Structures are given as structure tokens and as C-alpha cells.
Image (cartoon, one colour):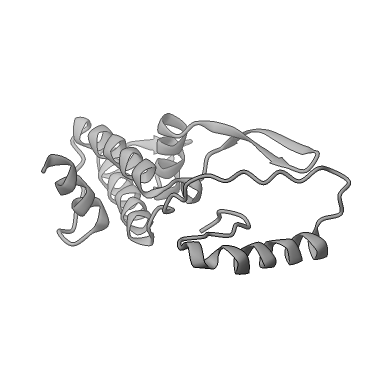
Length: 154
């Protein structure tokens, strides 16, 4: 999971200890050539490893089913990586990545930056896309995706 450096406070009793750790990190790691911004915001759970694994499995299933129908990319059978790239372009789009003064424009969004709800929505879109094209996707009964889907319909 790639969320960058952050300090999560989940109980009031943790506040002073975590603020001390934050202050220590700033002193040891920040050069103050640029200002540092601290922005309190609610914590969002990152997408789960189960969601990520299922999405990768789906990409493989879609690629195999499309390859069986003769779908090719540059005269070669379509691969799971091709499908993954296609789904991310279609449903996640791009964003600028900023690291200090460096700005890298229009980079494909990574699923590791999504929270569980965003990943679920992305996967719903992928499932609908696949279904519309006759691709059958495996959805394990105990997967996080199935749990979220059942919770939505309850």
C-alpha cells in the first residue's frame, strides 16, 4: 500500500504521543526549503489486498476470454497487463504526481491510492464492462468485493 507518510490518531489518548513522533520526524527529515502543510482529515481505509488480488484475477480472466475470441494487441494475444491498463485508463484516468517542486503530469492513477469504497466502485465498473462484453468473472463468496456488494444491496 502506498499512502505516503502519515500518522493516524484513532483515540484521543494517542494524540500527545503521535504529535511528539510527528515533531521528531519533521526535525529529522524536513529541510524547510519548502513549507510543510499539515492537513487534518478523516482517515480512509486503503483498498484491501483482497480487492487488489481479485481485480488482478479478473484482468487475467478477461484477457483469456478475449484472447480466446481472437482479440489482439499489436498482433499478439491480449494480456492481463493490457486489460489492467485499459481498465485503469477508462475508469481511473490520470493525475499529476507532485514530489516537492517536481510535477509529473498526467500519470495513470494507481489502485494503491484508492480507499476501499473507491476500489469497490472501480471494480463495479470493471465488472459491468466485462459483463457487457460477455466475459464471465469469478467472484468468490468470501471476497471483500462480495461483502461490499451484499452490504450495498441490504
